[in-house]
Length: 596
Image (cartoon, rainbow, N blue to C red; front, top):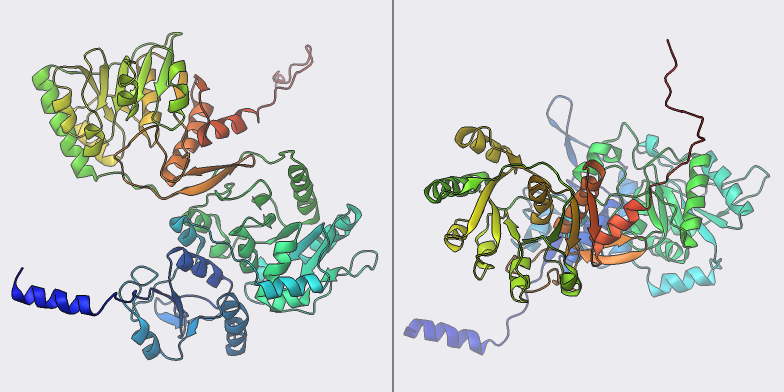
């Protein structure tokens, strides 16, 4: 070490521990609204462990019809001031509210939230997609003071149903159909529930009078005070309302909730493309939802639709699951390695196959045999002794079984990353290796003297282009986003349509524990998923794979038996019990065509 380096190190040591750099999140009114959307931004900032929230002033600009930027604000300066104090500071009292852009500039540093944000080029982060990318839900809870005040005011009914009303002049087409909600409240009273309306902040004095003249309970304080609103929501037996900002406080929590009319045509933020762009396809439910939380995709917020779904919710609250199978949101899954790298791998495999005389797999006719598909999920530790022959391993299941003296008939892999090959401690002479041409070239050294046949993975347009150019007419296999799903396709190519599946859990037994033994893959974000009231720790990739299996079962002529327990097995159980067989009278042919 040089004298200069020693002097610098000595000087730094004398300073003692350095203060932690403050991480700030910037909510910028030039790109974000004065609304409850701030709650989504704040939750994302909290999940990123930001220390301070900075509010940046400015006029929100959008692109006009002539292609030029024009100022757009949903509310007047007075309404902006109210929303800043009642909603934004209500949710985050310690937020730093800058009066000028210059003040914000003095607080900005490179490591801030949202990623890529600068004072000169602001970035927004107030949509649901931001939360799904964070994969961490930190519910907003009421303050102790608000909770005590709410209780003291008498909001303690055990069957209280809190109805959140949207009735704003801003985008009024998204408003609640108030007469229908009043009808629903009348019915709720007759069913032993206690409906309580929370009016829109634009009309805090709105009254809700039923058909018999009964004036339904209304909580003006909750519509004006966000902490009091949270306290009321927390005490509710059920929270219910249409797609609006305040209901998001329940959506990103575990509070019982029915969320109506997520789609209202004419408003982009309430359209199918918007939900899909944020990772939530139509008819899906959020992964952290319990059986008592539901987005109601069908119908409007009319009396009949409200009544039907509240009745279903009541059945679910009694332990009778009345909801149809719902698909979890679609997460953005990025393929490993780019197309050019996979193409080089495929070229290498083709060259080595020619040198060694390795053949391409040929599809065989289906017989009545059964194949065990052995994946590397945690439940393999519990079921490996039950595995029937023949068996096909995937990933680390190959080493797992060999270490226990069990030699599989087949092994399959299709991952192009080097670590997958490094997980194999050595090939076995009695195993038939059926490998995708896109596998890392290190595999070909390991399998030099083994029984190998190759197949092409249908991954994207790059792989299609490579096959058309280099191996025209060759078979390509798809089958999903995981090696386990692709193994079913490979086994099908070998002539099997009956499968027993082990270790395909699509969930973890604890944080980071998603395999039966050591795995060299990178750490993945984790998310909680609920199926029939049971909670599973999973990852976006595994959730997608679990959904793919349901599609596989729906569309393929096959028989599958699952061993072990995890998210995948729970989803399959949920799905299969939805089928109902209806016996028809012997003499009634309902499909008989009438003659013309």
